[in-house]
Amino acid sequence: MAVQRETTRDRILEAAENAFGDKGYHETLVDDIAGRTSLSKGGFYFHFPSKEDLFFAVIDRLASRLTRRAEEAAGRCESPLAGADAALSEVLTTLGRRRRLAKVLLVQGYSMGSAFEQKRVEVFGQFAAVIQDGLDRAVEAGEISPIDTEVVSRAWLGAVNEVIVNWIYRGTPAPSDALPVLRKVLVGGLERPTADREASNG
Image (cartoon, rainbow, N blue to C red):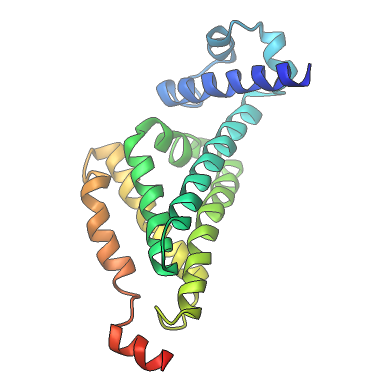
Protein backbone atom coordinates (compact mmCIF):
# COMPACT_ATOMS: atom_id res chain seq x y z
CA MET A 1 0.00 0.00 0.00
CA ALA A 2 2.84 2.37 0.88
CA VAL A 3 4.49 1.67 -2.49
CA GLN A 4 1.24 2.45 -4.30
CA ARG A 5 0.88 5.73 -2.39
CA GLU A 6 4.44 6.70 -3.30
CA THR A 7 3.81 5.84 -6.96
CA THR A 8 0.65 7.97 -7.00
CA ARG A 9 2.51 10.81 -5.30
CA ASP A 10 5.24 10.64 -7.96
CA ARG A 11 2.62 10.75 -10.71
CA ILE A 12 1.09 13.85 -9.17
CA LEU A 13 4.49 15.53 -8.85
CA GLU A 14 5.37 14.75 -12.47
CA ALA A 15 2.03 16.06 -13.70
CA ALA A 16 2.34 19.16 -11.53
CA GLU A 17 5.86 19.91 -12.79
CA ASN A 18 4.55 19.84 -16.36
CA ALA A 19 1.46 21.89 -15.53
CA PHE A 20 3.36 24.56 -13.60
CA GLY A 21 5.95 24.73 -16.35
CA ASP A 22 3.27 25.13 -19.02
CA LYS A 23 0.89 27.56 -17.30
CA GLY A 24 2.63 29.00 -14.27
CA TYR A 25 1.66 28.64 -10.64
CA HIS A 26 -1.43 30.86 -10.48
CA GLU A 27 -2.90 29.79 -13.82
CA THR A 28 -2.63 26.07 -12.97
CA LEU A 29 -5.73 24.68 -11.30
CA VAL A 30 -5.87 21.63 -9.06
CA ASP A 31 -8.34 20.20 -11.58
CA ASP A 32 -5.68 20.54 -14.31
CA ILE A 33 -3.23 18.46 -12.31
CA ALA A 34 -5.80 15.93 -11.14
CA GLY A 35 -6.95 15.50 -14.74
CA ARG A 36 -3.43 14.66 -15.89
CA THR A 37 -3.27 11.84 -13.34
CA SER A 38 -6.86 10.53 -13.60
CA LEU A 39 -7.34 11.36 -9.93
CA SER A 40 -10.35 12.99 -8.36
CA LYS A 41 -9.85 16.26 -6.56
CA GLY A 42 -10.34 14.36 -3.30
CA GLY A 43 -7.62 11.92 -4.31
CA PHE A 44 -5.31 14.85 -4.98
CA TYR A 45 -5.93 16.43 -1.58
CA PHE A 46 -5.29 13.07 0.09
CA HIS A 47 -1.64 13.42 -0.97
CA PHE A 48 -1.23 17.21 -0.90
CA PRO A 49 -3.25 19.54 1.38
CA SER A 50 -2.97 22.49 -1.00
CA LYS A 51 -1.62 23.64 -4.35
CA GLU A 52 1.11 25.58 -2.54
CA ASP A 53 2.24 22.43 -0.70
CA LEU A 54 2.37 20.64 -4.03
CA PHE A 55 4.34 23.45 -5.66
CA PHE A 56 6.98 23.35 -2.94
CA ALA A 57 7.12 19.55 -3.16
CA VAL A 58 7.76 19.90 -6.90
CA ILE A 59 10.61 22.34 -6.20
CA ASP A 60 12.10 19.98 -3.59
CA ARG A 61 11.97 17.10 -6.05
CA LEU A 62 13.59 19.10 -8.84
CA ALA A 63 16.26 20.47 -6.51
CA SER A 64 17.11 17.02 -5.17
CA ARG A 65 17.58 15.65 -8.67
CA LEU A 66 19.74 18.59 -9.71
CA THR A 67 21.81 18.48 -6.52
CA ARG A 68 22.46 14.78 -7.05
CA ARG A 69 23.60 15.43 -10.62
CA ALA A 70 25.94 18.18 -9.42
CA GLU A 71 27.40 15.88 -6.74
CA GLU A 72 27.91 13.10 -9.29
CA ALA A 73 29.61 15.49 -11.71
CA ALA A 74 31.93 16.73 -8.96
CA GLY A 75 32.70 13.18 -7.87
CA ARG A 76 33.99 12.23 -11.32
CA CYS A 77 36.76 14.87 -11.18
CA GLU A 78 40.34 14.32 -10.09
CA SER A 79 40.85 17.66 -8.37
CA PRO A 80 38.63 19.58 -5.93
CA LEU A 81 38.57 22.77 -8.01
CA ALA A 82 37.64 20.78 -11.10
CA GLY A 83 34.86 19.23 -9.03
CA ALA A 84 33.47 22.63 -8.03
CA ASP A 85 33.73 23.70 -11.67
CA ALA A 86 31.87 20.55 -12.76
CA ALA A 87 29.11 21.13 -10.21
CA LEU A 88 28.66 24.71 -11.46
CA SER A 89 28.61 23.52 -15.06
CA GLU A 90 26.09 20.78 -14.31
CA VAL A 91 23.64 23.18 -12.67
CA LEU A 92 23.88 25.65 -15.55
CA THR A 93 23.73 23.13 -18.39
CA THR A 94 20.86 21.14 -16.86
CA LEU A 95 18.78 24.28 -16.37
CA GLY A 96 19.80 25.38 -19.86
CA ARG A 97 18.53 22.16 -21.39
CA ARG A 98 15.20 22.33 -19.57
CA ARG A 99 13.53 25.70 -19.74
CA ARG A 100 10.46 24.35 -17.93
CA LEU A 101 12.60 23.14 -15.02
CA ALA A 102 14.37 26.50 -14.87
CA LYS A 103 11.09 28.43 -14.88
CA VAL A 104 9.65 26.38 -12.00
CA LEU A 105 12.80 26.66 -9.89
CA LEU A 106 13.69 30.29 -10.54
CA VAL A 107 10.72 32.41 -11.55
CA GLN A 108 7.32 30.71 -11.25
CA GLY A 109 6.73 31.43 -7.59
CA TYR A 110 7.82 35.05 -7.17
CA SER A 111 4.24 36.25 -6.86
CA MET A 112 3.85 33.95 -3.83
CA GLY A 113 6.03 36.32 -1.83
CA SER A 114 8.28 35.41 1.08
CA ALA A 115 7.29 31.73 1.14
CA PHE A 116 8.79 31.20 -2.31
CA GLU A 117 11.82 33.33 -1.48
CA GLN A 118 12.55 31.18 1.58
CA LYS A 119 12.18 28.00 -0.46
CA ARG A 120 14.43 29.41 -3.17
CA VAL A 121 17.12 30.29 -0.61
CA GLU A 122 16.88 26.75 0.75
CA VAL A 123 17.22 25.19 -2.71
CA PHE A 124 20.14 27.38 -3.73
CA GLY A 125 21.74 26.51 -0.41
CA GLN A 126 21.80 22.87 -1.52
CA PHE A 127 23.55 23.77 -4.77
CA ALA A 128 25.94 26.12 -2.98
CA ALA A 129 26.90 23.42 -0.46
CA VAL A 130 28.10 21.14 -3.26
CA ILE A 131 30.20 23.92 -4.80
CA GLN A 132 31.48 25.10 -1.41
CA ASP A 133 32.64 21.60 -0.50
CA GLY A 134 34.78 21.47 -3.64
CA LEU A 135 36.16 24.95 -2.99
CA ASP A 136 37.00 24.11 0.63
CA ARG A 137 38.95 21.08 -0.53
CA ALA A 138 40.60 23.16 -3.26
CA VAL A 139 41.87 25.55 -0.58
CA GLU A 140 43.24 22.62 1.43
CA ALA A 141 44.92 21.23 -1.69
CA GLY A 142 46.52 24.61 -2.47
CA GLU A 143 44.67 24.98 -5.78
CA ILE A 144 43.23 28.31 -4.68
CA SER A 145 44.22 30.84 -2.04
CA PRO A 146 42.29 30.93 1.28
CA ILE A 147 38.97 32.68 0.70
CA ASP A 148 35.44 32.78 2.08
CA THR A 149 34.15 29.83 0.07
CA GLU A 150 30.55 30.33 1.19
CA VAL A 151 30.50 33.79 -0.36
CA VAL A 152 32.19 32.50 -3.52
CA SER A 153 29.74 29.64 -3.95
CA ARG A 154 26.79 32.01 -3.55
CA ALA A 155 28.35 34.44 -6.03
CA TRP A 156 28.76 31.63 -8.56
CA LEU A 157 25.11 30.68 -8.22
CA GLY A 158 24.05 34.32 -8.43
CA ALA A 159 25.77 34.49 -11.81
CA VAL A 160 24.03 31.28 -12.91
CA ASN A 161 20.66 32.66 -11.80
CA GLU A 162 21.17 35.91 -13.73
CA VAL A 163 22.13 34.06 -16.92
CA ILE A 164 19.21 31.63 -16.70
CA VAL A 165 16.57 34.27 -15.87
CA ASN A 166 17.73 36.46 -18.76
CA TRP A 167 17.61 33.46 -21.07
CA ILE A 168 14.07 32.56 -19.94
CA TYR A 169 12.72 36.07 -20.55
CA ARG A 170 14.90 37.32 -23.41
CA GLY A 171 16.22 34.14 -25.03
CA THR A 172 19.82 35.30 -24.78
CA PRO A 173 22.56 34.57 -23.96
CA ALA A 174 22.05 30.84 -24.26
CA PRO A 175 23.41 29.03 -21.17
CA SER A 176 25.70 26.96 -23.39
CA ASP A 177 27.22 30.19 -24.76
CA ALA A 178 27.52 31.74 -21.31
CA LEU A 179 29.20 28.74 -19.67
CA PRO A 180 32.74 29.21 -21.11
CA VAL A 181 32.70 32.87 -20.05
CA LEU A 182 31.46 32.05 -16.54
CA ARG A 183 34.08 29.34 -16.12
CA LYS A 184 36.85 31.70 -17.21
CA VAL A 185 35.73 34.46 -14.85
CA LEU A 186 34.52 32.46 -11.87
CA VAL A 187 36.86 29.47 -11.86
CA GLY A 188 39.85 31.04 -13.57
CA GLY A 189 39.70 33.99 -11.19
CA LEU A 190 40.37 31.68 -8.25
CA GLU A 191 42.94 29.30 -9.67
CA ARG A 192 46.47 29.87 -8.47
CA PRO A 193 49.32 29.79 -11.01
CA THR A 194 51.14 26.45 -11.11
CA ALA A 195 54.35 28.02 -9.77
CA ASP A 196 52.51 29.39 -6.74
CA ARG A 197 50.93 26.01 -6.03
CA GLU A 198 54.27 24.24 -6.28
CA ALA A 199 55.86 26.77 -3.92
CA SER A 200 53.10 26.42 -1.34
CA ASN A 201 53.25 22.63 -1.50
CA GLY A 202 57.03 22.59 -1.42
